[in-house]
Amino acid sequence: MDRTIGIDLGTTNSVVAYTDGNGVTEVIAGKDGDRIVPSVVYFPTGADPVVGSRAKQYALVEPERVAALFKRGMGDATFLPDGSAFVVDGRTWKPEELSSLVLRKLKQMAEEHFGEPVSKAVITVPAYFGDPERAATQTAGELAGLEVVRILNEPTAAALAHGLDHIGEAGRVLVFDLGGGTFDVTVMDIGADGSLNMVATGGDRQLGGADFDRLVVDRMADVVRSANGADLLADPWTAQDAFTKAEEIKKELSSLDSATRPVTAGGRPVMFTLSRVDFDRLIGRHLQGVEDIVLHTLEEAGIQPSEIGTVLMVGGSSRIPAFQKLLARAAGRDPLFTRNLDEDVARGAAILATKLGGDLDPRSQLAKIPSPGDVASHGLGVTTLDGNDEEVNQVIIKANTPIPTSGSDTFYTRYEGQTQVEVVLNEGEDEDLQFVRRLADTVGKFPRPVPRGHPVRVDISYTEDQIIIAKAFDGVSGMFLCELEVKRDKIMSSMEKRTARDQLAALKVQ
Image (tube, rainbow, N blue to C red; front, top):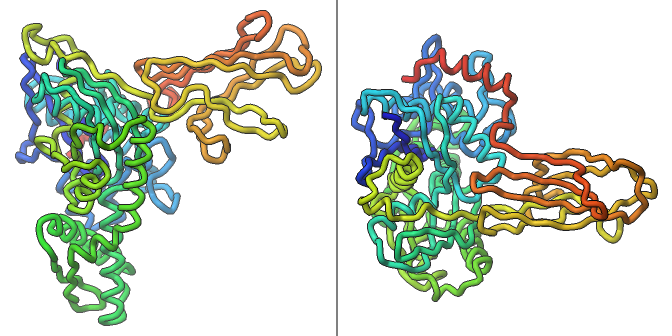
């Protein structure tokens, strides 16, 4: 049986789930009984990599051999904040390669559960991920030996899991997804038939629980320095221990007014206590930033807070009371939590996986639900010249446009006797090229020189599978000039991908 699994590839934790032909979803546990796998990789000397809880434990012993939070670097060369590469025993590990090891672990868990190979998956990403991050996620799945049948937005997955339990309840939903390393807010319309259509999305791919942990650690370091003059962060072991205890404190403050842990530095322990009030002050800047994003997303959706029927909280960090209060204030109603904050994204991915796989009883409730609609999380445009002959980004497809979609605009040649035109495709809505991403470029040639001001039409299409295609045409004759296509397989060359796949296949993930 060719099963398709659903995977929530998280910044701090990952989950794998499966939905059967009757629409019943189960989260798959490993041999140790754990259903949630920390997205952490440990490279022991002379042995195969370790993924999950054991890897997280080794972070206290050999932090330089442990990789975590690498989802934040997806689409980039590295995930380390200082821009350096993550190197172990002379081998440089890219974010998508590290992610592939986590995916291998989840694939292995599914195969052990079913007693047969698993080759297909729907993998979730933050809605605010751009094309480079989505491309890296696709590559990670392929390196793990999976055919990625769909990249699905995390808020859509959560709403899909939530909506399956609320068929017949149409309305507008705001999904607030705050995890360990990324943040999304999405406005969706849920139909009475269970259909899901994204209206607008916003977020920050560099914000999550790990940032709050860091603020707590910085406060710990101040307290220790005042107590005995020691530098808590000077030693990798004490620093890692501090981060572990900061995470414990953060979690306790979701239900308690204060939390205390002993912190060791300078040869003796110092008792560190943090109240919920002080924690809220520590994260105050982030609270304001999150509120601004929520309000901006509502504005982008063109709706008032009173039009939101349900506020749905997803992600482990949404347990923090300050964010619940923020949502109640911004949306004018108390938020609800999904059935399981840590597992519902994977459940939603598994639901879509079964729908796409086609192995579904047509009489089941799930078979009657339409596949979710999506929007472009970022604008798409091309580089052109403004009235001052300065290069700027001209948006052709706006962010939050329902996909599939297409757009067109006409531009004009700059020089007399111009023989070619360069098409540069950008991701982002800002006019300033410093604040957009250059996705791809190509050059088209005219059959003969054209005068200054000759029209060139550029068409951009964004497919349901989120493949971007741009074409340029002569604006007078309609003659095709050039085309570029941004596919998910371009994050690594074919040779790089083949080499990485062979190297990773030789490893047995523990």
